[in-house]
Length: 315
Image 1 (tube, one colour):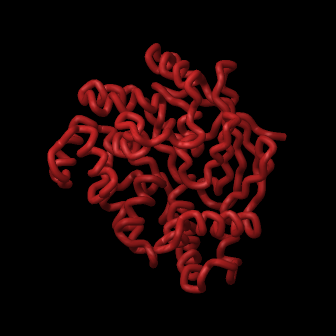
Image 2 (spheres, rainbow, N blue to C red; image 1 turned 180 degrees about the horizontal axis):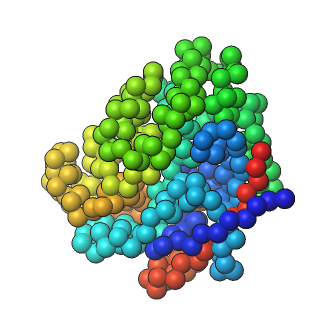
């Protein structure tokens, strides 16, 4: 029997926007259900979760799902950052309730880093899905099947797999061993400074500076780390703020002072939704139709946030 869990978002949150974000292995279907399948923290078991948002009350979601959807923060502070920065506020209004969806865990982020480096993302997402179906756990979630990544123990039993070169499989085994040793525990990494956490992650073979930042920022839930050196973010900031010429990292740091303590959230939101403000590019697939977007805008304005209803199935 499915288990149910309860959470009430603090501050604006839109599950539909999170689904439309299309990050990682999250299903971006248009039926208002977020389907999640992942290794539980501790990395010994897998779960499948159906998450819905409605006005009937919250029947559940566990701590890890809350972290994945950035629901472990009160978003009131993020709205205050928008009050300090009208440009950021315009992007918040264009994507109401969008919080950064994260990887399920640092372990899964590190596994993705090993799989995807210097490879086409869509191709490696397909490889990851096949690997999960073959060696992980498969769940029937709201009428669709979704597979969770193999646990570290399961991963170490995979000697080879089509589409994964031997050197990458060896690095996946290194990630699995690091997870078993507690080096990819989300709580452990969050207890460190972001810089120290990234340094620790870089000790895992095959994880360089770029992916160590991805694992720490998007796998643990640090909310106030400003990504620098990202050309797309710098270009969007230049356009949003009507700046002359390319924006340097130092200029970005200065401008982002108003975003504290949610600089990660602001950067993710700008990358995801700036084109809705700038125009010239359609909204991402899976985002809300016009009628629902109007309703969500009103919800954000009044502070009445529809709760989440989730069911969890264990492997």
